[in-house]
Length: 185
Image (cartoon, rainbow, N blue to C red; front, side, top):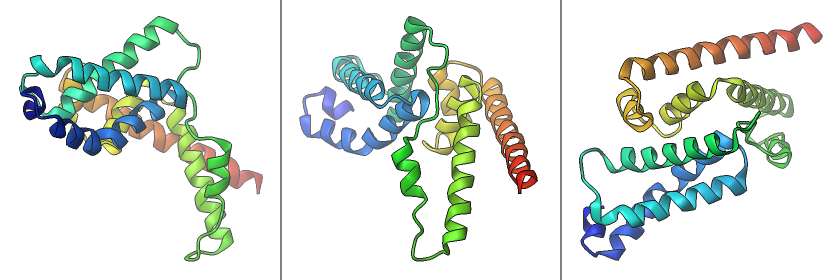
């Protein structure tokens, strides 16, 4: 980023290529609306470009860009005050593709694995927003609790609690839903 700030445009391309996938998935998983995710994603990169000259290497670049992304997400949520903005993030088409068996497993096993994945996605969607964000930043983006605390602007202990409660909530939700399925058989 410091190279880009000093005029090296190829440095921006390197940053973009390295971080584009994770940043986009962050938005998609948080809000579930691909068009809105794309808009917020583009706005994040726009802000990165605008802020290049004033960038301070106080934290890791990834922490800085996810903080920008988090703030944009919070601003959007506050602006629209949705009832259920944070919904399940996968389309029926993607779920249907997940049902196709691979060469490596039986159709029954593939169906069960697909069902478990779907169940997990539903349980993640049910988590409180702050827990879901902390969990996704930790598990999918690979951020430490300390980095997540910097990104979302809360204490380290609050972040650890959010991750712990998210894991507990997921475990309980998955166990309950799996038990419901087993009782129906």
